Image 1 (cartoon, rainbow, N blue to C red):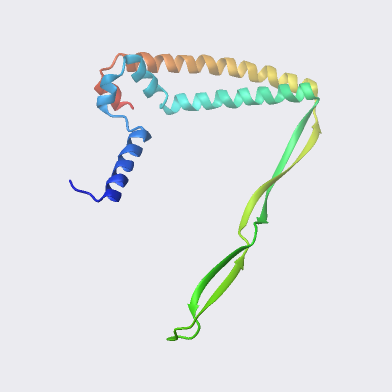
Image 2 (cartoon, rainbow, N blue to C red):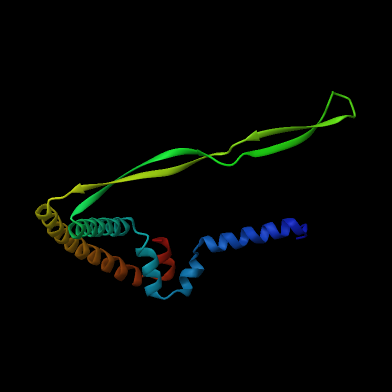
Length: 173
């Protein structure tokens, strides 16, 4: 296949990007250990990713409440997008002075590019320490239950996928 240099480099770039994106094939699965296959498959299972997301959310709530307790107040953050204007940009083009004439003149236009920035206001909000402690206790119990469920689901998936052949494990990917 003979390609022009620019097309050849573009083609090479596309092949490289496709490889980096992570198109895992059956051949890749055949090269992996059973543990690697199980990790790859189980990390993509929707019920497992949903449980992991719920765990992260609970951990963030617990952390936020602990920070509020140590600070003595919560911080309410309110943000909005505000339009801003950049520096003036001058663009000049050369045009015919009159249609069909050989005389040319410069026509310049000025513009200011628009962009948006986020402006936030932080407001301290009082808390009820007892309520925060109760919330933390409840979230810790929920988190413990969620971690047990996650471990059960993960072990079940892990054992099942490790027992499969690479080709069968790939079908679950």
